[in-house]
Image (cartoon, rainbow, N blue to C red):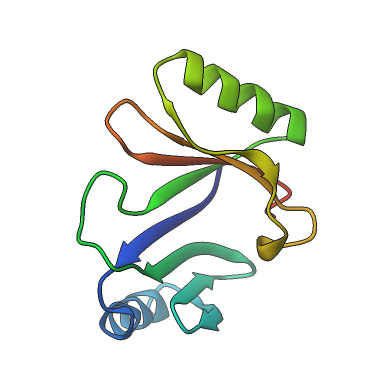
Length: 121
């Protein structure tokens, strides 16, 4: 069901230190590191921290739900819009995240970011 979770943080160095210490005790390690992002997992990435220039709020981070195929991403995105969500990124390829990565983004009725993804893992 879950593809990954991403938290937006105000200080990437401080947050990475916290998650390095926490995850080391449960068998999770850094699998990706860039200037403004660090990703963790066991065999593949499941948790991200990403530096952002804003404070905590409803759209601070997101949950990504795995879909079986691109058509399911499209259908879920449309259903979410019809059920009161708002568009935060139409479904489409996201090559910056991988060759087969296809995702759509919504804000739920309270403003929380939801990602629908096919080809993430």
